[in-house]
Image (cartoon, rainbow, N blue to C red):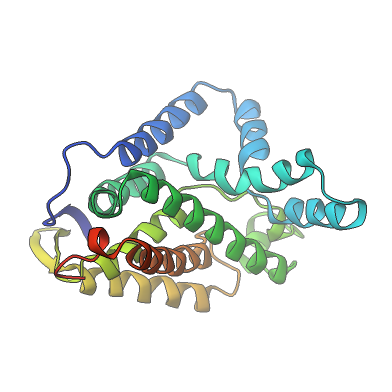
Length: 249
């Protein structure tokens, strides 16, 4: 199912959603002008590598925290959100962000939406890191293509964890909304938001439990982001109920 539009009214100007889309596209175009070696170095510098996170955390524990050490530990959890591995990866993420993000940003405000993206993206990266470290060298997928590789050393990139948070927030904030959905090859019809997102979450959870660390898709990051987004929506409804809680929430 491909979401095309949300029937929920939105503000004409949603700056955080627009900036997120613009930055992701700009980074993708910038990477397209690099050599293969340059792309590998760029991804290694800004993507999330679970095994590196483990080593950096061990250094902080052993030698004590420093501003530089804390920054180097936290930075890839957020910089990785702006990297994408291909055009389909980018377009899919940006479509979901555009369809669902503008409604959520309209409801909770641009500052709240920026915080939601940061919290959900960070939580998604954290859950994925724990899962990959737990995987050790037991990844059948990675071993298929890179013999004896450690899956925790594979760079992780993409905004889908943060966008999962947007979907989680939308699930609670707009249960009566409908998503205009395209089902290839010919079907186009409105689907209740709760149904669309429940199916999405079920499939991601199923993929996470069934993958046994063997999938190239970070299903656990999506699940973690979705859960974090729901918590952010609850926090927003608690802090500013008159603004955030609509008649359909």
